[in-house]
Amino acid sequence: MRTEEMLGLVKKASKVSQLHHVTSFKGSRTDKGGVIRDLTIEIQDRGPDEEHHRFRVTATDSGGRVATGNPGPSLEKALEAVRWEDLDAPMR
Image (cartoon, rainbow, N blue to C red; front, top):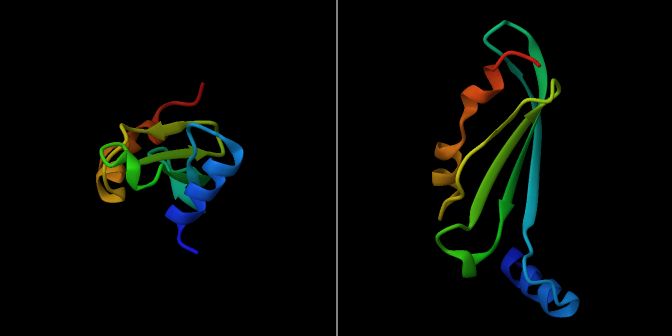
């Protein structure tokens, strides 16, 4: 079953108005300070009915820093909008 079909079925059954399919990736990234941190990247897909704001990307590192951007109509546009440099910000 395709993601769009699953979103439709879950929305209908649960009567939820906003529903996103979330795919996550885990890896590691070396920040500007040379420190290797674990990284989780989540991709939210709102489905084809949200054509202009379908995808949103959020990256969180093991130090608690977060990088995100505006949603986009394609995964490529959403990835381009992420402020990846936020993952190089000084730790608080």
